[in-house]
Image 1 (tube, helix red, strand yellow):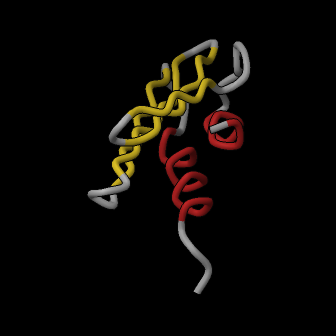
Image 2 (cartoon, rainbow, N blue to C red):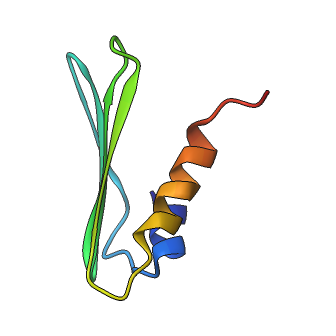
Length: 74
């Protein structure tokens, strides 16, 4: 999430927060102009990405960074 916030152009207000629950892990980071949160559901094999940013941020760049980091090498 740190690299994704940089790609979007948002400055972090602190380090990422990680919380583990019975059904997955959530990682969140508050930024000056929004936030980035990953919600995982390992049993279902999914990871939901939530990026909220004020314009003119390029949210797509943040998603690209996260996808690259989560995709296993071929």
